Image 1 (cartoon, rainbow, N blue to C red):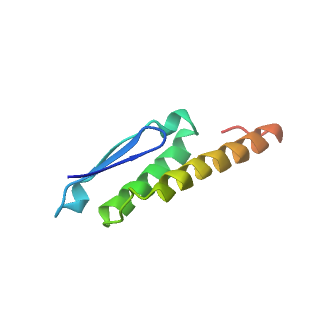
Image 2: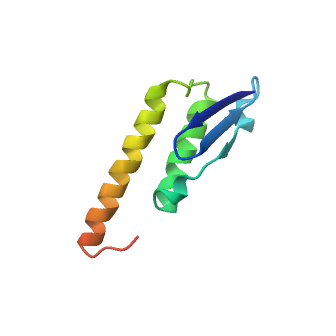
Image 3: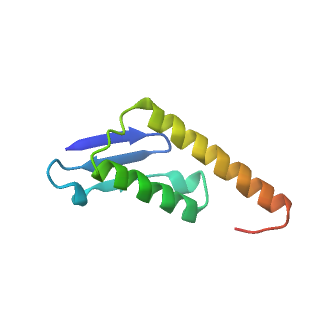
Length: 84
């Protein structure tokens, strides 16, 4: 079993030889709105299922940057009177 641990409590498990049976646990929805978390989680699971090695620290750094960018975008929208 390939298991990857990323920031925000993201843990992805993909069995060798059966990439479509991957599973994920995550706390991303505590850091960003749910619909954004769902999109990022789906993308990460798809990468792991395709055989991409998510243990490279750059994936964790990219995830942190994405969460920061989403929160900046959401904050700017709220200041403009939008709701999410």
